Amino acid sequence: MVLSAVAITGCSKHHTDGAVGSSQLTAACVSALNDSFAQDVHPFLVKNCAGCHTNGGSGKTKFAESSVSLAWGEFSSMGNSGIEKVYNNAISDSHAPGVTGSAIESEATLAHDNYDATLSGCTSGIVAGTQTEAKILNLDLGDEETLVWNLSDSLSPSVSGMSGAFLFLDIRADAGGYYVISNPRIRTGPNGIIVRDVTVYINGSKVDIATLYRGVNMEIPAWTSESSNEGTLSLDSIILESAVSPSTELQLAFAALVAN
Ligand code: HEC
Image (cartoon, protein in one colour):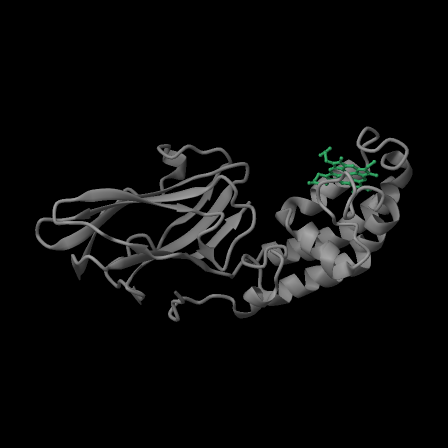
């Protein structure tokens, strides 16, 4: 279900393995991060962490695989905060005593700072958009329901760091024969979420009247519950002119939806 009208940063979907921010950063950024990882971070990880963070080892994420592309895929699965996690564990005396700790702090700092410089440059200019999968509205006149999207598996392109995050939208098939949507809201998990510019699509076409959510520009904190003000994207209801019919499909698209 591709919405050609949505400006989605092209190449991100060619980067597989959930590459860092592939859906939230431009292809150029992902490529720059991949290069920085290969040059600045990967050698450090292989040298110091391969005892555990490789296939068969006890470390959960296998970011110290000798293959750069495998290691990059693993590293990127941790999202944009991966570099901080790696750094913090690298300099921790208790994480893997004898391996991690102050002895490798200067090396770790160098790896961190080089990568982080590239990352900060990228995140200051987020451009990538994403969209939800389509929901079929199987409503009779007078019915209402809450549409729910699990943001960790229903966005295209997918966005990392969305575990535990859900998007809700109330919809009613008005007796007058049209749909009314209201109360778009997001519940967050361990990450905060930045949301910009929400558009509504019916059967793959942008609903022009649904401009009311276009101004959304919010930073929702981590662990925000479904019903809180902080997670409410808009208090406005929107009447969609499209006629109520059993096969109607609805999607939301975002200029930006990124874990923070
Ligand atoms: C002696 C084995 C061992 C070594 C060596 C080791 N780790 Fe770990 N690491 C683990 C284990 C086990 C876990 C999972 C449990 C936990 O989070 O503590 C883990 C978890 C982590 C995590 C949490 C993310 C995840 O899902 O894996 C990070 C980040 C991490 N290690 C970084 C490092 C870095 C960086 C190094 C090298 C400088 C390193 N570790 C060396 C055993 C190790």
